[in-house]
Length: 517
Image (cartoon, rainbow, N blue to C red; front, side, top):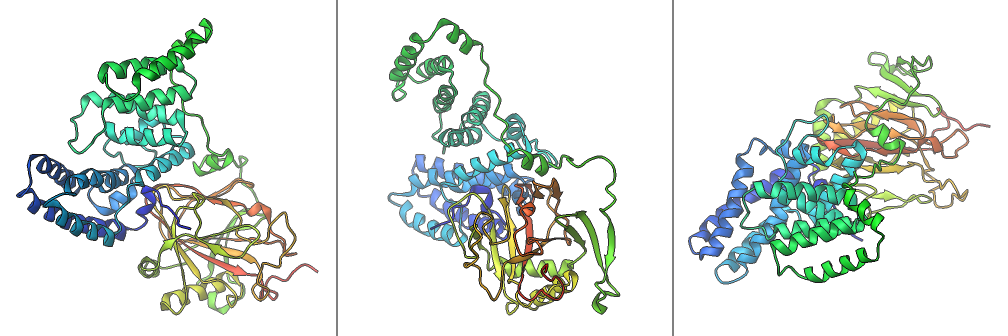
């Protein structure tokens, strides 16, 4: 099975954008040569594409780091490199353009440009961010996102592409909100020669959204407008007759209610408390909790005497800690550099199994790599330090996993242990390793907005702090899974989130954390 990335999950590292932008510069140079031998229609299409690239490279947002850190900048780049390219491609499929097309396609494959379905991933990512962080469509389209520097507003075509995809996905309330903004923007903007989108397309998607939302009267009125704009729009007369027949069979009271009905606001769906926690809204009781404290911990270990662990207790039962300043900046940069060449679509471990695999799901959107100590000496140093800090045996621990989450990247609620809470059978767990007894999650970057780790059953939110680590036990002393450790990686709203996971198995830990007798 293949793991499909959305538009914004493609850019999980600066290297991704830098490679693509370097390849794009070569492509633009090739296209400039082709302009000289092209007819007028092809010349106009090529120049339009070149000008779009020029706008990207010369805009204040052209810095790759700025692109990967803001959803709107990322979307614009993906749109240009996917649908923008597909529109130009049609002009290069014949005569003198064929040789150029082959050359460009090779460059695109090597740099791993976004594919044509990237817009679908962007729409899904926008929806996830809007729902989780309760962002109005008007604010999103205008570039006003919480905690982020304002970006240039999206165009009418941009808003149409997002809204149309949400219509296809059956998210009709959000689709209508995006499409109405597209319709408002349409008269004020210059038409793009490469785009085939027309005002009638926006109106048609909008009328379908209203129809599915139950407002047949509004759908009919929009269809009448489509006929005025484009009398030959496909099936428009048949739609008008269908909607009119539906209204004829509806009570006068219901029709009047439709006429008075404004577009319903998008339904607030943020998975209850999880969205609440991702937004950082305080759910804890007021006043200081006496059992939460900060301390220096040495575990009576000579290794830690001169540099004890800076330990913050954030929750008791289950015990969740933040370990501060656990990794050097130089080690972080080395880890990221080593991991960049190994990153692959993130794998998931299904409940009741200790086998991981790449799956077709939106449960996790990230890239990850398991790094063995043989790959680089910095990994061995970090593993050793984790053992000293946690006072646990690293002999049976898993390899260090590095994961990178781009904009919209997330991981829905899950347990780290393998045991299926509804099935006592443990035959699937490797007996020489045991289950994942403890988790150490090291934050390798700060995150500009979003990206928190939340524990929804105990109202705990941990925001990424570069160089710090979260630490908790997944199992009770009797070896059963602690259901309160259910946790989630919130969607990244802005920035780039890198983490390192170390899962420590239960075999070999009897000296420092013995089972209950």
